Image (cartoon, rainbow, N blue to C red):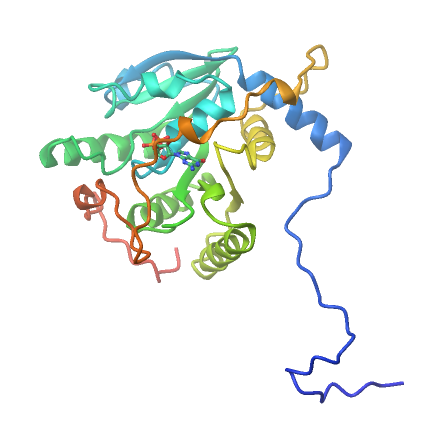
Length: 292
Ligand code: GDP
């Protein structure tokens, strides 16, 4: 029998079950074995070298995936969480290395994780930022071993000018992008899922159908998902000889995160780096409504 749907929307008497949308993936044993093994593999990360420009980078062979994001997006913390090494990416943050392309080998120099400089780094003079942007562009355009990008955006401030610029660059170069909405622990589950959905929709509108996930270096949300994506892109194959114990990853505590960019009582974002962001794109102006 056909039921009328003409009931008031506000009717509280309806017994119809509410449709629940779940973003949690069901564990598939094969996938979970791969991500566990990937995490183990990523622990082998070792600092290889820093290069100020493309022609000084390590040899352009094999596979690499680069991490990009505005400064303070949580890039160093994510790399450290992914490799389970507290200081790995911090070392590349030392003055002098902040504007370098930093390479990490993953047990093999032909499989690399690359840490690109944080965009909008406050301590760098404007003229240097422009030179640096050119180098970054060179790297993104000409690097043959570059498989794609992990683009990190603070979940509270997604899709800023720099992010859209990177997304469009990657798209024009046929590179994959995997978007991380970082510091997901800063929002409750509902609001975090809503941002995820909103950003997904905005990317879809821009015809940039890249993958996206929630991520927290603090509570390790999304760590396994990121590990398998990285491993897949870097052509890692399952190594059955290694056993990995997820519990061996220590939980980070609040004290490890001295996040200076909190939201104030008005709900406004105060990021000291924001004022120093370059608002220019090197060779192009980005129109985020543009369909690439
Ligand atoms: P980067 O400039 O992109 O390398 O950012 P960092 O990794 O240095 O992080 C910037 C700030 O955000 C630091 O104060 C971190 O402690 C904090 N932070 C990074 N990741 C997280 C996270 O997952 N959760 C929380 N609550 N804070 C984070």
